[in-house]
Image 1 (tube, rainbow, N blue to C red):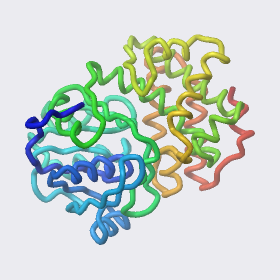
Image 2 (image 1 turned 90 degrees about the horizontal axis):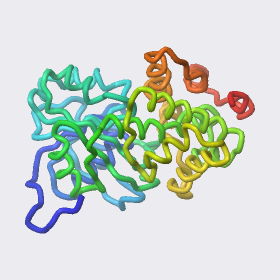
Image 3 (image 1 turned 90 degrees about the vertical axis):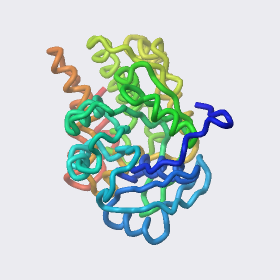
Length: 334
């Protein structure tokens, strides 16, 4: 979203709850354009941000954001952005509930319907949904590396407000259907489970013909279940509704161009994917909200999504054992 001279948003107090890879990128960019930014974090990451600032590297440039870093919000902000993992969203809202009363909130998360769940917990409807299409890693406390730039998509209630604010800091656009955009992002997020299972980068997994076949099978289930549920997939990151239908029903030699295109958009810097990052940090993954969301949506239709169900189980196995699995184990799924 381009901002014309004289139309810049006034400086605001913005809280980013969860300053990991995505939340940290958003917070640092908002700080860079002059907003008063408070972030919440924990442990070594919180200590590093307090000591050295929130350090941003990579595709959006270098910036050290001297943000206020807290475990919990102490004051009500003008605007808030929830960027925790989906697994920690409810707990983060409950912990900061008193400071978020009536405050416009943007929920930037993987999975489906995070903004609806947040609105129910908060008891007000001033909640927008957001999708981050950038690729970012946070493997060192206090440091965020953006490996590939991408848009931030917002929609729903308060969507226009957040599009205007974020549009000054990051490439941002507003979608007419946040549900449709979430389903398209869910399709893109099918790149996450396999790298987390075998311990390789997203790019290396897609280069492997056998692993790419399994990834495509998980994508095919996602598109077929979404379309059967009446979802209108929205265009995101070069994925058009036509390409969604190609994934759903075209021959494999044609449909595999979708994951190959995603690999090209990620560039040459190895990207671990958010699920593998969580495993390497010994944190719970979002696999139940990504691949598991497809399984749940299929069940609501009286159907199954066996490839996604198997990927959920394998990710949980790696979480439990701390050991990545041989690629040969995964290739058998498709």
